[in-house]
Image (cartoon, rainbow, N blue to C red; front, side, top):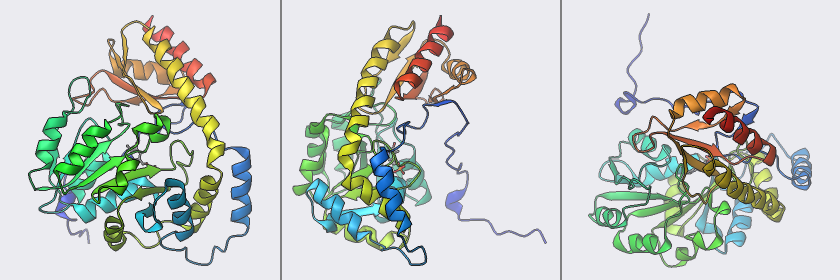
Length: 356
Ligand SMILES: *Cc1c(COP(=O)(O)O)cnc(C)c1O
């Protein structure tokens, strides 16, 4: 009885997201912070979990966490919505501001999830590619966004995988030029200069949405928690499409402790920023290597030697990075997350041998 009806036609030809997970001694492939949450925070989390009622459903809107995030960012609680990782919120946005008649304006090379979500929700993708130096073609984005068929524009700042920050004057120009949602994905903003964030514009523009995650600077990639800051009107729409219990009680409790102890993470963020500067200068000293400036916790690096071969030789030496060389706009490039000092030392030592 081999019978199976074909699935939704939107799934035709879709490749499942594959993070290319491989075991490695030095994992610099996924832009995680490579060390654990601080000991005092871990202790506070364990205390909360010990008291938790696992038999009860969680608060769907995570109100206690929402309140704490709102106070942190100086907005109202109804301007905050939490999700099962930033990725879930990206999907919710695709459902709410995508679909027929609502194109996604994408600025590649960038995070692949935006275009994947568009495809799954039957949303047309309009690409306005970055220039060869990865800067945004600002005039082209503003012009294209203002034509009336765009539901959402995504500007990733700092951008993944290129590491550059989008100028605020450009984001404001874009907000003024279109009624489309302007999603500024600030997943890596904690590693950038404070004044780079689009947050001050929230008070002025109802169509601005800012994405944050606990996965990178706050070291909770395994927990799954992200949030959006937006106007209350945007949050109200998103509550219609979100999965009611996707943000589980354990994750809510963990993230709440992290928000309350957020000052304990500053030292780790500063360490990553300092190591990023050291890595830039040590990588630049290697033969045939171009390092793109980055405000995030990773570096995009272009190799004159075949980048896939470099990737393989690194992996043989226990160092896992991310290969972007197959992408048309990132030919020759590997993306390398900034690790702890000893991990970065191993990376540099391995590259010295490989490129010699
Ligand atoms: C990592 C990342 C996210 C969100 O990750 P989650 O782990 O789902 O919170 C969002 N945007 C970009 C650009 C990222 O790199």
